[in-house]
Length: 447
Image 1: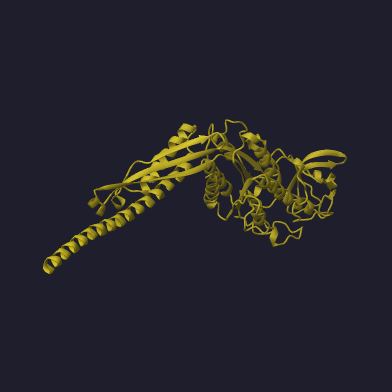
Image 2 (image 1 turned 60 degrees about the horizontal axis):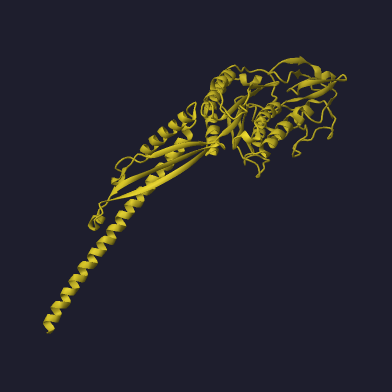
């Protein structure tokens, strides 16, 4: 009896070992195959994420929503294939499903979904030869209202190649956004001694912009005159605000390009008892009495009226559009500190700087992003352009551009307002790269 019991115990142990071995192999197989499956799913997720982002960028291509949706689908499929090659970890992906839908309330919704079949190894013991993993991704591309502001003052002609490079970069920049009906709204403002609204922004529900009109306006610009930054910024802001509230895009942007600090004020002035409207320039040098004299038509780039400043004794409290000549954050104090201010070149120069920052501040308070670009080829942004105001190092043109964009690098900024980007470049050939950096930052905001 003992012998039979021993043989029976051994038989039971062998059966149990066999059962545990099968179970262990199954668990091991499940762990290994599941690990491969998780790896494939992570790769699938990443590929679909990149496909959705690429599709969101591609909706800038085409003149109709159907063309844009087709461009988005093609770009998404291309990026998916590049990021999930067939046979990765033995998996076979299906063609991704990329859809792009334009919603009436101002954004594109991009959906990307896909699956991959993964062959199993140990799980075959359990009768399962393959497993299927699924993933999806989504991207949002907000509609955009944007005005590009371009400095065409005389210093842009130094060196002679500079303005041509900037105009080429600006042309390439606008091509990165949706034109045509249903697309982004883009407008153009240029400035020198005055300011011109070259291309008004579309203000109705048809949306979009005309690329040819933008290109023609940019190409027609030439370099001449002073730097009426504040009036140009104000005209851009006025265009943004002129879009009816119910039709505005969820993302609104002003892109401001200049190569120097503001030096001209647009306002209604009292001259010999009569009211004259135009821009009064501080200049960079002048007569001994320090009075600002050069006067220009504010609605043209460089239409000289004469030294009308001879007959202007004081400056108004507000410029055109009710923009205060005084700083919104007390950065500069005109002399005297309350209106009427004496017409001096320093007062005009300080007012010009105050006013452009005042307008940018008002725009940001209304959730408009301000991006700034600066060309420093003639060192106008990194050195003091004038000596008659006793400005310190905080009054360089580059500092003003940082403040306009409300960057964290600015000496004065506001955490509660939108933060833009400021790019300053030294070589004219770097203009395109600078504009592309700003475009990339804006396109990231649209997602």
